[in-house]
Length: 397
Ligand code: AMP
Image 1 (cartoon, rainbow, N blue to C red):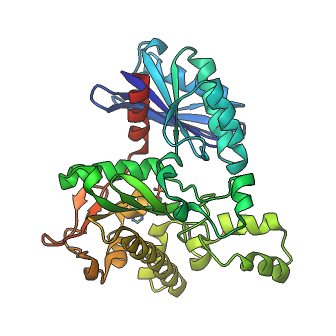
Image 2: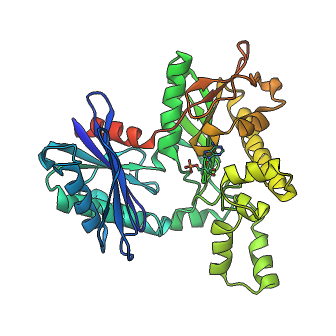
């Protein structure tokens, strides 16, 4: 079975084609600058070098056409024809309360996706364009939606309700949804395999630490709490996002700096986090380097970030009454020994004891805890595309 996985942003379309017999990636790539001058496709077949095709594409439908042409191209293609595609899996950011699992897309699902737009006005529309593009380019092929929010729909009310008048939850669906669900689910499954225990017997804390970052508490395979909220802005201090803060700061900042609500929103989403604190970069590699070079603000940014993650891990240890493993994933979690050391320091009360030598690992599945630690620390590279392909395969069957 061959599956194409699609992840659409407002001006980009990322894809991976999988052979699900062995879960091999046949090709992957991205169309960048959709609707902007200078758009191009970067295509990387498994059996050849990356090629770049420059072609103006005005929308996601044209971008999708470029992708399927590349996939079936005589020189750098990996499929003999489009008939080989058995199903298309789409990453969809927000499924609201409508979706607690992946679904085969039909007209009813499309209407529900439309209803979710107001919850994610920047993210969901391009996801919908991607689905429409696929329907047009590969008609008749099963389309599956895999939601970032679905895995967290198992959270109990006490985790997802905010301390707001209840009517706003009822009228406007204002509640915690959580994101990165596909990643948290993938690493939780891998952790169970690494630990050699069934997932439904495990208590796990998964730390997805990339440019966007979130932590989840997973009990018996179900998400019971997570740090992101109605939107991905809540929770940890991130690359450019502020994470949680006193809501009164918003009005105070508007008054003091004479800002509009839109300007504050941009500051909180794009200019805050470790970028805002360090005044160096949103890339943790740059901040780690600046810290080594003695930059005090960069060091402070890292300290704030590490402390934030520690607080969530600590609170989820309380939620779960201890854990069997703490898992680190995504760009920073997979690649930075420093973050794992700082977050797990002095947590022997919870059975967490990092082996500093084993911890010198980057991007490789590894148990980095001491042999006798009762709560393991695991590094597990995430693979959201493979998870989407697996969910798509299960439903397309
Ligand atoms: P992601 O959003 O998962 O792609 O992660 C991106 C973040 O991971 C960026 O802030 C990168 O700086 C960080 N990252 C990637 N590789 C490394 C590395 N080797 N060391 C430290 N941080 C890294």
